[in-house]
Length: 92
Image (cartoon, rainbow, N blue to C red; front, side):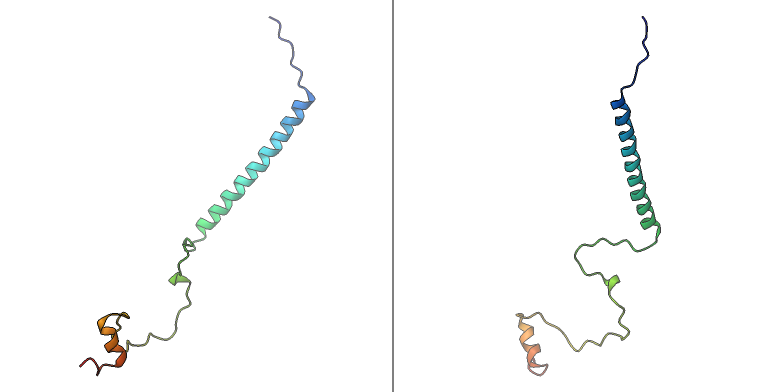
């Protein structure tokens, strides 16, 4: 059997060139995402997800100490809440 040399068509050459260009762009994108991921992981920052809740770590520090508790607190609507609203003498 005689093997004839295969002649590549010009269309296939152009298509291969475009495919190699696209491969280069995709590899560059993967390298960029990988590099950014490594930079974020190794930066040492605190990793906290945003879950729509206030984070205590993001609040500014309060230089003054907290005020002492003025007295007991009762949930509104409970029997003790009405007595606390009128004052400590009303409960006696």
